[in-house]
Length: 124
Image (cartoon, rainbow, N blue to C red; front, top):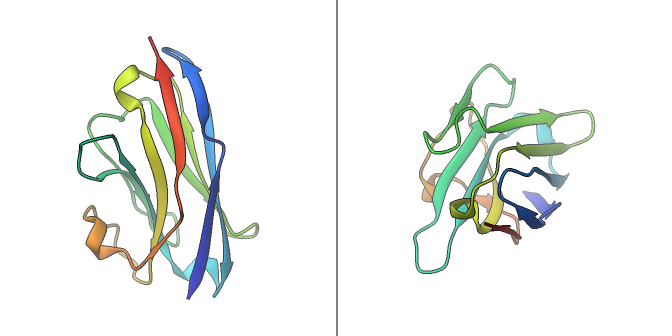
């Protein structure tokens, strides 16, 4: 089992940047494929980005391609999401998730472990 704790959310203006972190503890972080998801009020949780345990596979939602970058530091047991050129529609609660498999998947139910989430608000 792995425990996940997000940080780095907050308020940003449109066009600005934020960097989210997800600290993992428990079982070896490096064996997990990781993902970032987000959920806006009244909407379903959606996939943002995912990265395989060995960093060979990285996948982004079309809505964030070219603006967001997912990365991980297995030595520090930490996952990151660099968000640039933020838009008001990026406003949501962002959560990191882990699955004990090599494949990056895009459905929330395919991830067994979740953090509590961090709020990102982008003003226009």
